[in-house]
Image (cartoon, rainbow, N blue to C red):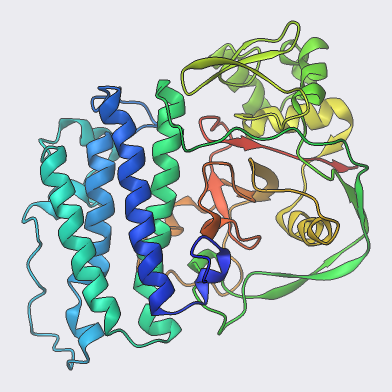
Length: 400
């Protein structure tokens, strides 16, 4: 039986993709329902949040926008540039759900359809998508937008989990990171490493194009993410009070946010107590430190006399760690790499995905306990601003 929650889905065909699209929709609805049960469809206007009803409608809109309005592409009809696009299933969908038309803060002032109407929109768009998928060419080009819509929905499933954590809403299908048995650091020998993805191997995000070699000198890297026990030493040593360990931007952030520990940490005496989906929980000290911003990760590294890995180092270490049976994918891991295009970059049709964020964001790798397995591909480049700590993020370090 085909595993529909594996990164290999980038290369699999229509049948597996159809099942995965249904699976993604079920996950979306399940995580949205957590907000309904909590009576929290109205949320504060914060940079890390979106109105849950907007996110739900946006998922349907994205699928309709790229697939449902391009019937000719999948039914073999000759494209006619004079022919008008198909009407929206919901006539005002573009004005409501297109992020390029509706800036973040304006989404709170929209009068959106209610949950029942939005669910009906999701049903209509998924039915149309599956119908068109059945006749789509079984090629990378023919399946491109179906795979794009799948991974887009998977990313928003994690958005729902992150928002639930921020708001203290129960999310039962997201398990906490497990403790890690301490392991000696990995020594990765000098090598040539291939960054990016090659042509002809399934779906590729535009920021992964294209495969190119980089030279790596030998380096030492943690075998697993920094644990709460390790991070607690930094806190106990006054790390949040000492500007020596922080970048200028990081120290300004610490003072502005009055941070004394990572987000959601309530107590660091006699163990670490955190708010996990609204419940005060004592976390195992051997579990990965979570909700650590890139500023905090870099400060810990300076204090420890280490550094963050670059994304090519992370990937090479991941390949070596997998051969040794090491776990990964429980927290997104910050890297020292700025989110920049590879040489020869050209944006894909969804120009809002990568292009606006180059130069300001950092690359994260690996995936978290809230990430669908389909996105836990070592080549996948997640990206966020360095102050973000609402996501399920941690880090590992390299020797200087």
